[in-house]
Image (cartoon, rainbow, N blue to C red; front, side):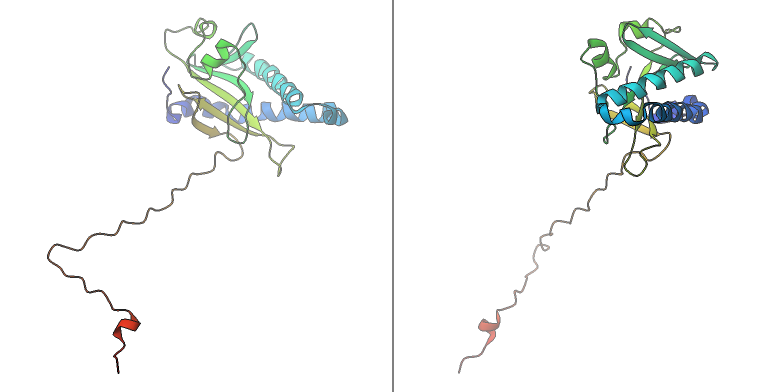
Length: 204
């Protein structure tokens, strides 16, 4: 489906925002406390994968007692349906809020906001759905508390918008002012050019 604006997502997710942040924080804390010194021996990908799996596990338990939220799985593809036409997948995001996409066709479609057939078949109503990522990341200033956001990809696999559930969103893009081009003098007006000091010096 063509990307829907953030304003349409807010009425759906605002009621769940605090609960989702708590789910992510709980999963992250569980890994930090449970793995302990073993984390130093893990690759970044392994740590992120472990946290991601726990987030999905916690979200699944939460969805079972939350009206309007459904957990779905087809093969290796897992997702959560919200209000039946917003689909959420859990992914770690980088400093630019981008996700690492699996090389499968379904993942590539999803990253272009195209519903894979397996996801589309799970929708109850005959309405197009919008693909979202539930993203999380940590900063150097706060490595023990992840920042959480919703990311909406567009049809070009680029970021359409980011909604920070906790922490900060993308840095604002500042446009530098463009200086005005010099305007030519009006027609019929003579412009007097000052002479150089050497030219103005009288001889003798």
